[in-house]
Length: 140
Image 1 (spheres, rainbow, N blue to C red):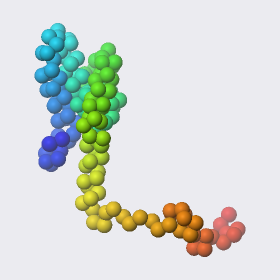
Image 2 (image 1 turned 180 degrees about the vertical axis):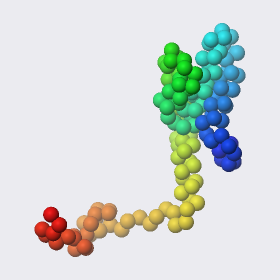
Image 3 (image 1 turned 120 degrees about the vertical axis):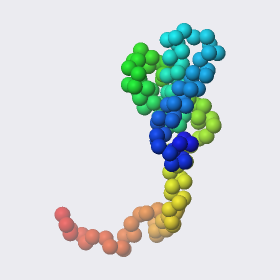
Image 4 (image 1 turned 180 degrees about the horizontal axis):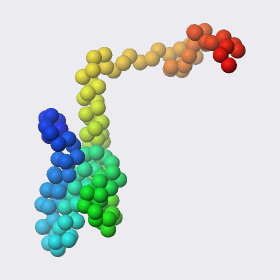
C-alpha cells in the first residue's frame, strides 16, 4: 500500500503478497512447525494479507493457489482469507480500493455532483410528463 500510494512500482498485489509472506514467516516459529507447515503458514499469511487489502477472499486464495500449485491447501487458505477479511473489516469498514476511489473523486472539480431536483410527483429522476415526451404512436 505504501508502494502504490507513493507512486512506486509494484502495484498493490506484489507488495501485499510480500508483506503477507513476511508476516506468516514471523508468526510461524511461534508454533514450532515442520518445514511443510512453515510453508503453509507463509502461504496463509500471503492470502490473509492480500484479502485484507483487496477484500476479495476467493480471488486471494485462488491467486496464491495458482502461484504455488498447492491445491491441497485450499481449506487452510480459505480459512486464512476469512480471518484476514474479518480482521481488516474490524480495522476499517472500507477497503483500500474504496478509500482510493473516494480520494480520487474528491480531487475532481465539481465533485460531488449536485443532487437531482425532485419532480412534481416527488420521485427523484422521474421524467416530467410534460417535458419532451414522445408523441403517441410515434416511432413504433
